[in-house]
Image (cartoon, rainbow, N blue to C red; front, side, top):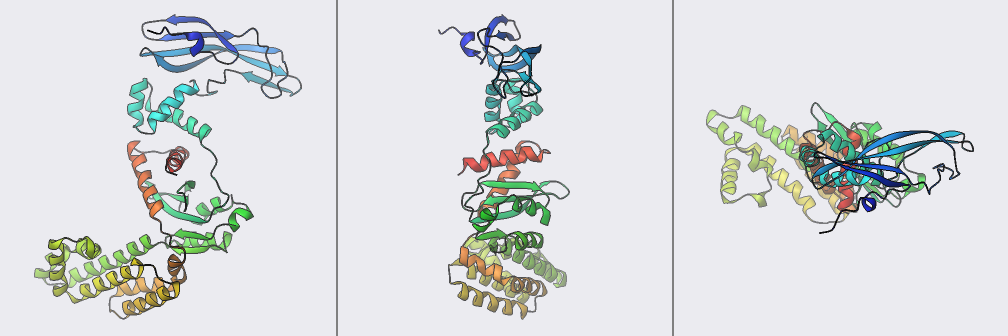
Length: 399
């Protein structure tokens, strides 16, 4: 059995082990200065006289299931060339967290896969301390976002708190790397990111995929006038499904008592793609369309709109098909579908851009689901900077 060598375990730069005190509840490691090393200013490297010496304390990884406390002298040097006082402590210890970097990194690794409460129990620390350690490690280790050579951006908003607490999320559309996440979903939230870009970085961006958020569109038109705005198919279909469901509810209010039960339970049938319905669902859908003509027209329009985007086609052909669909919707006698069609015609350039760049928000929708899981695992998260660091780490792991 190998005997623990505390001099090797605690060979901190500029320090040596003076004493090891083993107690029932903890192990204390007392360090002293290595007298062979003369005090030097950490900024300029010149030798400096000591102004005063204090004592620092840091927790380290447990040894034989007992917590370890490291005490060490802290020098305050007076550097005349720099004209300032400098504090010197072991590089292996975080300057403000009262813990060694190796303890914090192990805690951070566990915090990436386990709830903070479970990690806290494992290391006999509070869950808030786990989060502080994790945040400090992520701040130190994560690289800056790669903003050079961007071609496609994905932009979306995500609710992170109750009562409409939203953040704006910006991803690299090619790699899925999180580039920016900030509070709010208005124009300024996206402008904050766009103003970080240099003219060369802006010039490389060819397309930006967004939902039909007018605030984002205004920010992009102002700061990225040469990039093409692509309206995301996912949000288009979501808006269309909302129009279909409003039509269903309107028909329910006008239906006879005998028909209301059938219409009330038809939401899933109308909104689900026909290829995803089983035999029972197809039979129920057939009964529904025979029962109500407006819902039949709404369902046919919904499926024909999906068919336009089902296959690749030239942009000119797509524009013609979308315009024809909008004419059919406007003449359908269904006010909610007609309202949706007017919006599509107004933004048809951005809708057709999907067929030019063939990009969707699939990456960012998946990323938003990951945000929800991280918040759920943390039992809520109020520190947006910490959440951003956690999500950025996850996005880099998936590249």
